[in-house]
Image (cartoon, rainbow, N blue to C red; front, side):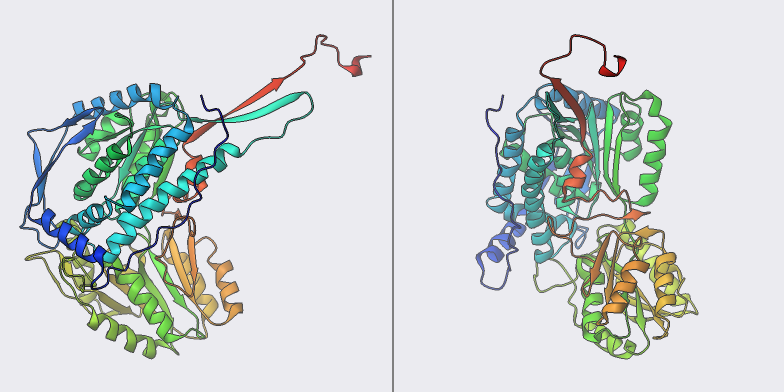
Length: 541
């Protein structure tokens, strides 16, 4: 039992290393990348204290070099899902009773390991298997995950310190209990930090987790599990399974001890899972917590007072960093007619200057998209624009998957504000621009709000403060992360907690105390020091 009230180390954001020419971090990560590229790994499932291999193997290849095999992973079945649940529930018996400071210490240690000996490894894994350049990997895989661990530790103490008032003669207390059962974490391909946080955040609050990473993220998922083990996370607290989604769902969503879903992925899948949970609601011991972030159709809208160079840079970075495979990436823009030609000129120059290729060459700004499925979907939108009468491709438009899944950063200009690629999520390096009459500002704001079902991120560029205020009000529900004179893709833990509403998810703000609140079940405790001995109230006379 704890015998003190403890303050965790003050959380600060991890500095992003530059990886400039001649820096030691650049040499270390490229050396680590080369070693990983030239070796093959065999990724097991992590269930309880076991690392389980199966006969059913799937290959792992870099998206930018899809004929080169860098490993295999074991594919499981229903039995492995059941084993993972059993292991989680067994671990729960001791994990929920561990003093909170020891739980938190594990993840603080993980943060320091990640900042030190694991940094090059997790960044190189993300570069190799998810085709991110070194700077993108540094921000995602290392820095953001370190921040998740450190800031969540601080939020834990804040949450536990939130206590009710006590009247004379009594003591009121609030206990933040872990959920009764296990949490199911389903994680996406694109962000290593998100994958780790989706299982780590519930675990930090005393929950046990069954984790299913995307098939295309398994390589870095193995590094995450190695990190957890090195930090001293007890066996069974987080169990990693690699199985087909419907196979996992068939078992998990019918289990009486299912207590929560932590999800990042597509809107369609999330809605299906919600429906499955609803269909089985009578089977559960408690009402499950459903937390999900599901993508976006993120916008940039410029006012006629905006600086053209700032708008063009916001588009170049916001749309094309991470190959646009970032749920916050800008994929539609509304540019006023008075600055369009200047924006267009710089934007086209920017796109022409991009280098594209393997992340092994740090000078490549653009790398491959994650998979053939993703490649084909993006290509279909580009082809649609090529054949359309109300759209024109002014930059990019080419794609090639002969060696890797490479799609040129593509700029579509349309005369139809409801053009297909203005409305639908593409999840790739494609942005569609609608040029509006500079004097139709209010009408354009209404258009931005009503065009898409999503409400994740959005940005406004303007020098006119009245216009900014107007946009803030008109677009209040159009974006959970709203940026003024900046690209819509930056979300730093502790600074801009991330999430959106409408079709973009439950807006539970990963990287804030709001997310951790979803993984506890409060218990109110009232203690009366001198209980009454007579039932009669004074009003009875």
